[in-house]
Structures are given as C-alpha cells and as structure tokens.
Image 1: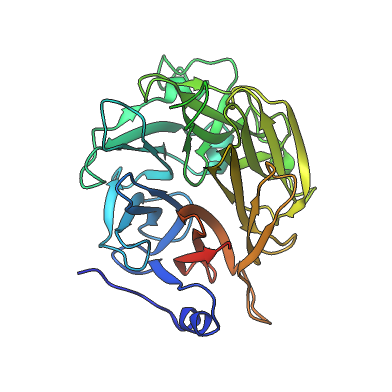
Image 2: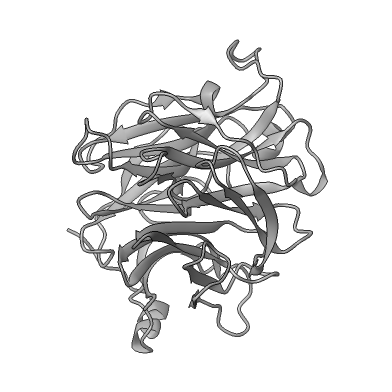
Length: 385
C-alpha cells in the first residue's frame, strides 16, 4: 500500500498556501540510519522515480551505502515502497545520476539509465591515493521494476592512475576522488546532439591541496545510447566540485558547479556551444549565492527556445533558504525567484541542503530536497506561474 507522510511542518506550510510537501525518505526508517543525496527523473509513462543514498550505519559519506528509490504514479502525492537499485555489501554505492533515454528506437517505451559510483575508502584517503572510486551504470526497461547487470565504465569516464589495482587504470592524469553530479543527468532532445546522454561529474587530481583546490568539474557523455563514452573537457576553475547541467539550445549546454574553495560564495557557471564537450566561458555567478553546497538544474523546451531552472540553498553562510529560479534567457536573468523552504527563526544547522528538480507540468516544478539537518528528504511541488 502506498503511504502519504506529512510532517507537522509540512501541514503548516500547506495551511498557509504553499506546496503540498511530502516526506519521501526519513532517516531511521526501512533499515537505514540516514538518507542523503537526492535525485529524481520522470519516466516516459509519467512515473516519478526518486533516488537517494541509503546509509545503513550512520550519516557519513563512506561506509555501507546503497542506492535506494521510490516510485510515484500521481505526480509525487504518494510514493511506493522503498526499493534497492545498487548494493555492494558493506562497501559504498552512491552518487546516483539517473537519465531516461527517450529516443533510442530499440526501446520505444524508454530506457532508464542509473549511473553511480562505488568506493573502497573514505574520500580523504582516496584523495591521498589510498583508495579507488569506480563508475558504473545499470538500466531498466520496465519502469524500474528490475535492473540489468552493472556495467563498469571506469576506463571510459575516469582517469585513475592505479595500475597496481587494475592494469587498465594506467592514466597520466592521476584522477583520484570521483563523483557523479549529484542529481539527474540529461539527454539532448533536439539538434545535432539529439540523443546524447550527458553526466556531469567531478574529480580530484594529484595530491590533495588546501581548500579543495585539487577538485575539478568535468562530464562524460555517450552518443550511442550507452555503448561507449567520452570525457568532456574539465572546467578549469580550481575547486569545481558537485555539478549539474542543462540543455539551453539545440547545441548549447549550461553547467552549474559548487565552488569547493568557498573563497567566492557563488555558483560557478559555464557555457558550452558544442553540447558540453568543450567550454566557452566560466565565471562566478553573482546572482546565485551559495554556502559551498550542491545545486540542481533542469531545462525544458518551450516554443523555439528553452526554459532553464536552478535550485540551491541561496545563502552565503548556511545550507538554508532553498530557492528555485527560472530563466528564459539561458540564466542571464531569472523571472521566477521562489523560496522553497527557509529555516524558522533561531534554527541551528542545515535546514535545506542538496536538491534535485523535475518538471511536473508546464506550470509546476517538483523539488526533492534534504531538510531539517538531513532528517528527511521531501518532495515539494512548486508553482512557477
């Protein structure tokens, strides 16, 4: 039976005319101490599929971590039972980056890709060269009821210099830490790159540097529905960490990246004219304040152009003030600026942190986000008109 969970806060929000907030994942429930790192996609049949990391023993990034998910068939009003997509026993599976391939002629009902990473040590140890992160994907052609066997694409999407672990992992770049997105990937739906599967990611290179300056954002992509992958040029700004992207024309791509250094408390924004393979410009966007946190992006076609949405904790100090912005001019200006959630006065900690967004209809965006010091991951439909 599907259940609807509404916290006291959610009920209060609803009474004051905000969106109908629903709890999707709640820490301590269903065998997991904590749920982190949300991602969401809409399947071709209209179902919403919400993913997160199910952390078995504690809230920390490394440990016994599975990728779990729930499905909604009513635009997020109710959610089905918890299911497991990836489980590597007591090791780590995380950084879910789902994409629905809608244009592969071999799968007319759509094919769900779930890209993810595995790891065998803590991130600081991996940055020191004492561990390995790998890149995988699984697929589903039955609406996430079942999944294919995992496919390891580490040699195509990553550059680890660890031949002592695997002779194939012999690269001069010496990438170490590695993570997808977090959030959904994307597929180009028009133009010369139509069908391209695109997964933003980040890596550290060489020995760890202060303030995370060894991190760089990059991406990998496939133009043959997942048979092969190529790595896009990295974003050259030091400290480029968690990143997401969106299509903004037939050939252009917008990338939105976390600045791990924290020296500038704004999102790093990059533009590409060749489908995200190379970069034309990168800058700190002063219109997008950020406290060193993840942010999410989404786009959809409208008329001859694209509408772009960005959601992040729009505060330079705290993970709070989660704000949804919408642009008709590729992110130059924002005609919608809506606060999704903000901490009550006197609140201590991270009230709103990581998020992902999905289009419910032409007037509504669904926001899946971490709330209340990571106690829950909730879904909130936000009207943009």
